[in-house]
Image 1 (cartoon, helix red, strand yellow):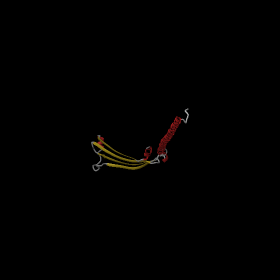
Image 2 (tube, helix red, strand yellow; image 1 turned 60 degrees about the vertical axis):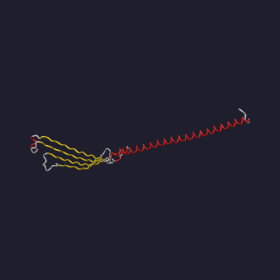
Image 3 (cartoon, rainbow, N blue to C red; image 1 turned 90 degrees about the horizontal axis):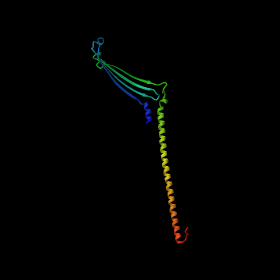
Image 4 (cartoon, helix red, strand yellow; image 1 turned 30 degrees about the vertical axis):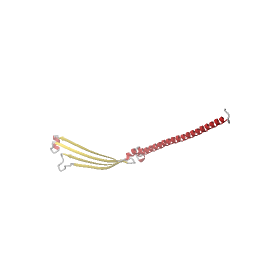
Length: 178
């Protein structure tokens, strides 16, 4: 629903990247002299990066990150077969000072979504009430029509009985033909 979508802004986010750069180039005479007389220079860079970030209700973003870089090249001695390593672990907090500061402005989307959900619920209830009202009205109208039909049938039966009585009296001579 829209409330969950609005709240998802405050869910933690994890990302990870791995990158490998490999280069192999022929050395110029000048580079060969500077690089221990090697005719080729080979370099392999591996970078591993992981970040976990979360926006909190005040608008601040807290981020924990870790980076590991591994460098191997043809200039390193054989004893460094795994190459050189450099790592970083850090925590950063970014809090906006002017725009979207504070929980009130950051929770506005959630409050609007909750209000929309409440409005939708009451519209649903209104529709249900209208359907129930229409059904109830139809039931009472049917009941009224059935009563009117019963009264008319009774009236017809009484009128037919009166007609039969009148015809019987007329046949016996007690009533005058009109």
